[in-house]
Amino acid sequence: MALNRIHIILLSILNKSQAVSSATAITTEEIENFCSLGKSYATLHRTITTLYKNGYINKGLKDGKFQTHYITNKGLELLEEVK
Image (cartoon, rainbow, N blue to C red; front, side, top):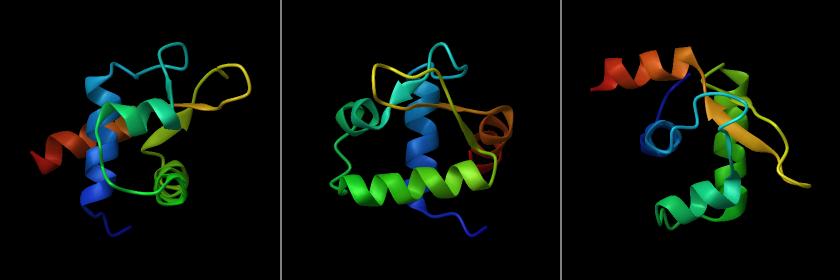
């Protein structure tokens, strides 16, 4: 997978938000509000889907009707490599 800036930013947001387990996971809207990326919801959704497929993030507990997301150990390792 070829990573780009938005992938790393999303992983960093999840890490800084302490979204590291299904219980502490955050919604896409919360990700959007955490840092003004200037990206559409559709772009964020595609990016999140790509990160899921590659094992860098996972689905957390639902927040009402909204799906939540958290960074996996693989995602945390990737962030360390990038630093």
